Length: 297
Image (cartoon, rainbow, N blue to C red; front, side, top):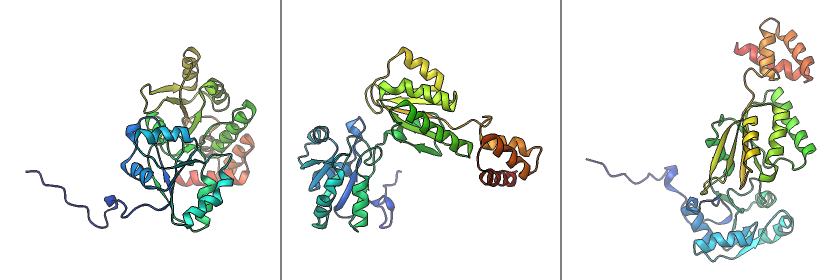
């Protein structure tokens, strides 16, 4: 006979918070599907004194769908600094202020960081209601290694700056970074960005996630060149998250791969010197990594 679930104990972390939220509340909103709004997010949006949002029209449509009539005011990259003192004043008056972005988790590629830092430094309460995030959703659907991962926002829009940013990441990989890299990208720049990824990182496994949680959600997986071919034939549309996998073990430019090959026949000191010269990386850094790999062996 089934046993009824018992009430959660007082120290059960699933109990939820007691009492109403107060202070600055960072609320995650749907990235596409309205059904992903949480009950806690609904309650916070309906009970707070003010909602700060990037675009009052876009947030207004979300609130209207939930029959919520809380006052909204804009907070975006151009007015955030000017709004901070006013918001801190409201928090000091024990008002509850919610911060949302246009979609997803606030602060992640969106405004709000400077406000949050100011509230923390002023000793005012800051809390968050977690929820949808396009980068993490794309990561778990990509088929690429989920840990570690590095989310990098949008790549620079101009090619020279974009290639320089990718080059810095590639240099970090030569120094030992091994992570799935995640970006957002505009559809009209996707092919250019894929071309730069291919030039800098090589033809690795990658994924392009589009319109996540929406009716036309797709996740395309393959090598960078596979994806380039696909989107050369089919123009990309919608909101895009782009991912590329970490270096393969046999990547000839991978620092660990180079060191393991050198350590097979040489001392730690000589292997580090050889690889440091070949890669241009600082000898101390390469030697420290060589010592670590030698200890693993």
